[in-house]
Length: 171
Image (cartoon, rainbow, N blue to C red; front, top):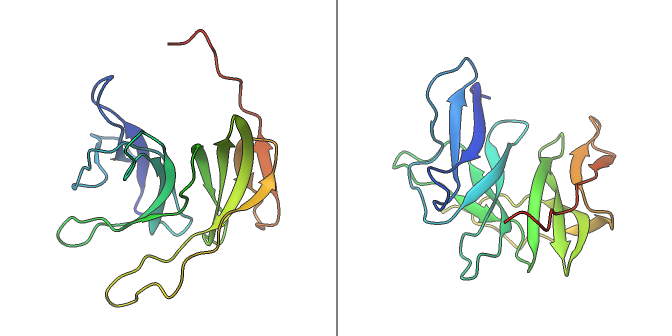
């Protein structure tokens, strides 16, 4: 909404992924958030209204398992970012895609070596002023064919782009 492009990058091959932004007109990139956790944050997708960013992260994981998260934009006055976990499941999530109304996220998930596409309501972030009343409903399986999802403009359909198989020779 403010004209920045959001992306993930890392300083070196063993450093964690960080969310960065750069003005659409060009210039230097800068970290999107200043609270820089030790966890990786990657594959960002900004919500249609520009108020939130969805991403995958190994945040709060002891074994590198990634989940889908949403962070509020911008950070508060102290530079703190309110992040909310959308999924909590063993496996890999990726390719988040916001619905046109910004209320749902479609995403790829790999569970037990099988790819699929799921849709989750996006929980409203809890705060002291507006605590969360109850947990968000669990994600809904929408396709047993895994791939990168994209919503139709009316939010009634999801196209799924096939992902190439993992290259077993890549190290």
